[in-house]
Length: 438
Image 1 (cartoon, one colour):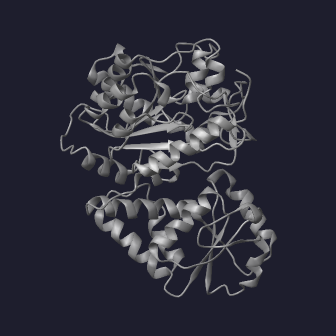
Image 2: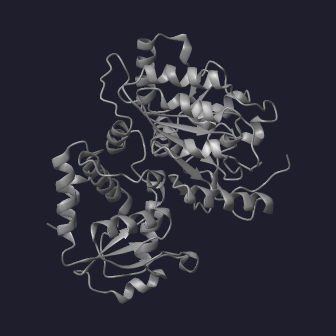
Image 3: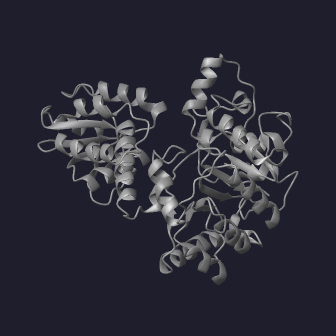
């Protein structure tokens, strides 16, 4: 089997939830590279993930190339200039993988074709990676092998449809129940714990500096748990609960919130997003050592005050020393979706933006209301969107009624907030964590 036959057989799969299929996907992909090597074009986040995936599968990577190669670093492979591909002029020995997000694939393909190499029809790595990663992780989940949860943060399958993560989360929580009259497809939610933060980042993902001008507080522990319990009760299994802010580690009741969430029988994994600028105390660290909790440290650089940079270093060292599951961010740019100008476009164009937007599945829960994403939440709080938009007042419904609402929410093809958002194609690329005056 060659790679094109493999793609024809498996690329149409949305996700893998069958053990035999998972095994065949892996075995047959390896067969494609018995006498071939891979060339990865693009050394960004996608390129790094594809490279790590190929290493795990034993696929030999001949080289990685990038236009910005001088600023790219890989642990076990040197990144070269894109024109070095011309030196590898044996089309029957190499397969080229374009490693970039879907909405930039055409741009990268045009760049590649301008090189004038012997390689025809390179492969879009992201689509292949999604199938392979899903197969690998599902295989591990079925064989009681560990899935290293921090890697899920930058995985292309890390969306609601990741069957492997759901299966693994159920095992971690020893969940064997089967709920009736519950939402099957709503599987993740992020709770906004408040607008209190150590930073004031321009174009913050949760719009904290802007929302905090009219409202700055912590959500009370009882409210947080009541809301999460309500949503979980209407779901078959709530695989991931994210805790965001503001800065979650500033919340005075974080310990009780974590304990309360872990007691909900059908909640799997807790993700905490932190800038790392608040060093966890001993009590919090003990809770963070639980294998069901994963920390994402944003890992901002010199755009923030030196004292806070020192705190980040101390936090990372503490997490490593205590064996806390965590991921250190390596984001080099942000996308600005803090504007709310109305965008006039057709329904099909709107649906296409929604389909390709990574924010579409980052559901946000705040004080009894479920929002499509952080842009939807902030626009409503700032009184830009009407209150009667497509947010859900979760306590206005019975358990069964909310389950139906969640299914409809999950199957939606667009959202009202999308009409006032430039994501994902037209949002301006900006620097990471640029600080504003508080």
